[in-house]
Every structure is written in C-alpha cells, then in structure tokens.
Image (cartoon, rainbow, N blue to C red; front, side, top):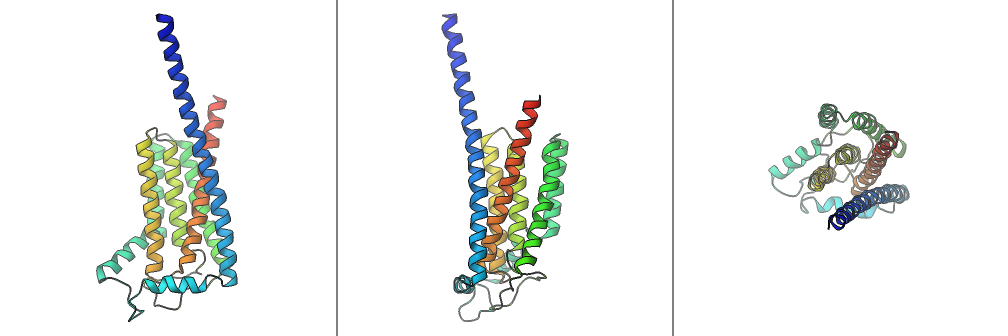
Length: 243
C-alpha cells in the first residue's frame, strides 16, 4: 500500500510539472506570436499610410467622433471631453516616468534586481524608438478638426499610444513574470491593456491623431513588450541553469 501511495504522489507531481511546463511554453509561444504579429502589422500599416491608402478610412473614423453639425465639437457633453484629456494624460511623459519609478521601487524592494534592470532599460528604449520612428515618418497631424490637446511632434506612430503600450505592457510583462498566482497575472495584464486602450482612443477623440497612428503605436508597443517578456524569460532560465 505504501508503495502504491508513493507511486500516486510521484505521478501527481509529474502531472503538475507537465502542466506548469505547458503553461510556460504556451506563454512563450503567445509572446512570439505577439512579437511577430506586431512587427508585421506595423510594417503593413506604415506601407499603407505612406501610400495614402488609409486616408479615407482615417477621416471617416475621426469625424465619427465629432458632432456631425459642428466638427469642432467632440461627441458627448463637456465632462466626456474632460475625461478624454484625463485619459490621454496617462500616456504623457510625466505620468509614465512616475509609473516606471514606482514599478522600479517595487521591484527593487522585492529584490527582483534583474527585472528592475530590464525595466530601466526597456521602457526608455521603447520611448526612444517611438521618437525615432515619428521623426522618420514625419506624418502631418490631422487638420480636419481642432486639436484639443497640445502637440509638438509628427503624427505617425502615435507617441502616446506607443509609449503607453511600451510602458504599461512591458511593466505588466515583467510583473507577471514574478507573480506566481494566475489571477494576479490576469489582473495585471488586464489593467495594462485597459490603460493602453484608453490612452490610444483618447488621442483620436481629441483630434490629435489619425486612427492608424494609434493602431501603429499599439502594434509597435505590444511587439516591444513581447520582446521584453521573452528577454526576461531568457534571463530567468539562464539564472536557473547557472544555479
């Protein structure tokens, strides 16, 4: 009987190990798909935008968020427009720097030094990449409606959309890697996705970006976050092998 019970325990442990390994490899596969899909999506969007193929759709979607009688007036009452400004601030440099510093503080206090180092490199690196791409494409801002937010740079890709995706999704990817519970992983990822979506939508609502600008920012930012997740995974596996 003791031999049978021991065999059952070993079997259960083996099944549990296989289940964890399957989830581990599935996460890596999903990140590779996001990375490759994001790169492909951005290249396709950039090509279509450069050739002017998206202009008609961009104008239609942008004007759909405006009063049909008065295009200077965004849809909804004044408090909705104010919410748009609040949401767009979540993708601003000041807010993102503060979020990164808070996350770095948490990772350092939790003694997750490798994750903190990666976050300190990945987020500024993604923001720098966004700046370089904006300067390279140099797409003009929408001129159909007034800008309800101050802008200084070119339009493609949306810096707010990409920087929010880079920051929130990258930090979520790093925090998920150090969280053991599935429900916490899902919560962190859900919050990051929600913040990223709100920032991007608000940029179109405020008339400072074409919809394809935002979509390009999302795809590039998601690809960068997936790359960071894979880098974190590689670092952790290397540490486990070394130990």
